[in-house]
Length: 445
Image (cartoon, rainbow, N blue to C red; front, side, top):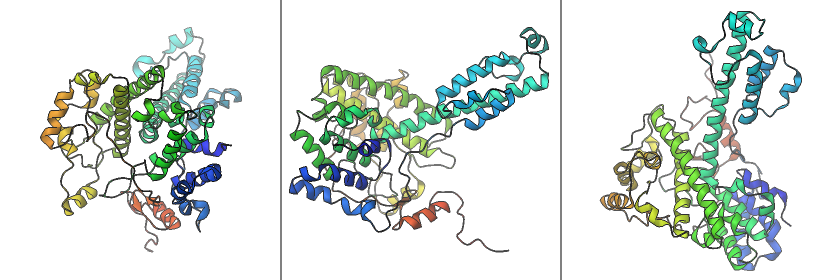
């Protein structure tokens, strides 16, 4: 039987070792000696098997701060019944409905917040039956304007965090409980692979860990060996590789293509906004002071993940001819100046993908139809940079092999710290954050 806690992990950010321990509880007796040996590599690092049984890293993705404070203030100012406060005001739709209901009380149209043009004058207030002073009317108008501003921030943050999550684990959160519980091998692979995808980035010049490690490969092999019982539709939400897509029906492939295409459109629009709002150095992609590098890198990750999956589906459906006319490029992430310097000191050459990025139009311009980027143009840019266009992932999904299992490091802003309790203290005092450090022992006057 598959425990509910295993399903819950795909909505969290559990360490892969801890998910592996849950999988061992489920699959233990069914595993061959060789399979048990592979899974066993992760078990000693599971929190429940370690001395301190603690991690300073959050086991959930960040959430958006809701509008409860602003809503309660509005309820107070408008002298509303307590039932108005019964909604879940971390949901933008609920906040929007609240704004619509309360705005009608002073005959204000949501979205119209200009003090000069959108407020009612005395005659208009009287005609609308608003027997309140100008001072009180203005106070209520300002309250609603601030609430609408908060709603705009919430919508943007929900979108940004959605891109962060999909950039990590694709459409894992779209997998229903019933689909997850339908097959034990599928469930175990999805849970472990999702946890591997959710690993945090490390401060390193050696490259980030690849999610498809030897444990994921062992679990996926169990799915392949029991293909008839495997829930390929559920697996395709997180692992849209050719060997998975070929198991889907034509309708299922079409649905997935639509989902990834829609996501590409959303991410492209958001990338364009971020580019306009920041002063990025396109030539080097080294972070400058004031750059919103977290939002950019998370969204770039979502674009590259969606682009790879989109291409996988084009090839699976025999529609790769689309790339002849529209082949938007990958998006380069920003790199910290200290990491770039470390690369330089170690004699590492410039990322060969960077010249390709600089020779192609922006992907959001291509996707919106403002620029043209064909497969031939991408191949020419790769040739100029000395890259193989297909193997480097510019005109076809990049192939990833199986990597060895490596325990999850305890990280503080990407820097490995050996002890989780020390990591918590360093994080609290803002070490490695790029912000002003709060000393352990402040100087006494």
